[in-house]
Image: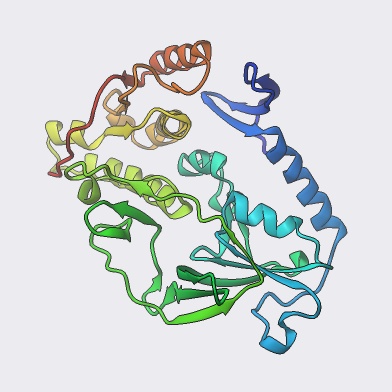
Length: 335
């Protein structure tokens, strides 16, 4: 257990019958479902007890069946990754197809962005010889249900791995980086006996002007790295001799849109990162950094119990985080 975890407690969700486990660290509270918590312990026990030599490359047609059904899983997130580890290796031959070669423990993504955890501590490689799971790093582009084949496009290209996608209502799926252009990868077909589609979701911009060009998104490990790097860059820019006081205030105002669990935890982690770490390095900037949390809902954590939402809002205000609820973002512009 990491040293920064101060307390673990169980919390009921009020009549739903679902038990959650919350890990508290200062302002940060990460809530895990009981199923996810139990699964993490089972995974650790199985990994320690089982040392199986297994090739994770995609086998050829002669090796493909061996009396087992080929289960192709699209996606390496919670659903796809968990299922691949739970399938019986004596009955099934699982294959994961995903643009990402890793599984991200998303509840701790905000802590990694804030510096409380190293990024390597919240990712697990999909390619693991002990798991008896094959893997291909590619994006599924089409499925032929009659022929039971999947058309895939490799996401490992000459310029590197493609960025995490998001939805652009006018042009479809695009890169998370405004100036980054998708480089086409090689296409190929993969047969399957059973198909599991667990691709998750992509971030939508809701056609808000300027979002694609000026906002940093927060969904994957690469996004968290960019947020952390950009915060440090803003502090470096703020202490330059040529930076005016007005520009310094603008550089050190960090706005987070979305006051759900991710946005709320990110605001808390960012606050800790700034005041516990960065202010020691930049004492001349004392009192200038600001964090503002925006949401269209009338309260933060609107999907949770009202008492929990009120407690979170009160705590963040005490810590200097500005809360702007019932606010709709009309647009973003760069300077």
